[in-house]
Image (tube, rainbow, N blue to C red; front, top):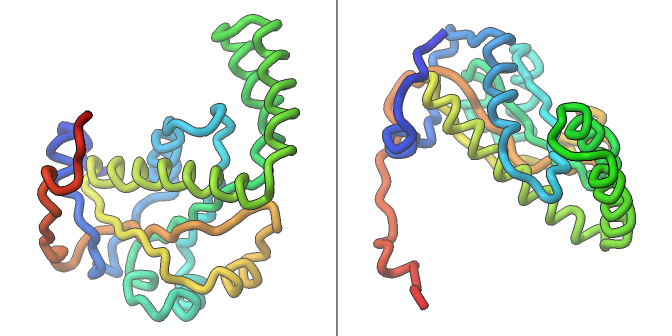
Length: 208
């Protein structure tokens, strides 16, 4: 297990999108689970946590996925690909989420029931497009956490939005309830990432 005591600012500055991975380096399933457990502390709309993960480690399956993901080399050479899915029926998580909060002593029973009732009124009334946007936005939040936590542990990542989502859904038998948002390659860099610059903050920020 790699060290993960680096401070947040350093992690943010050192994280880069890596596309060349050591194909012989394997990250244990247990450590990937730890990374995902930490990542799911990310915020989400009404704390409904509308994310699911498909972790692909099998080499033959990664080879198949590479064909779906525009033949990107890192899909096959990384230790694992984490597919982040957004749950468009996130309101169905309300009972589980808020009962858990109640049982943990974080809210009283009246508050729990009110939250569940309000969520089950609001979210089903939203358009499918609105719910998809919420799920995709929250999936983006948890994805950034995955990449930062991985870097803090000494690993490298690259997010990939360029893949055939229709083929992905068909190959991995994904329910209509879930929308694939991003693939994250996870592993050990075999070559440094390209350094990049950023638009100056004064060009992108307006204070009122």
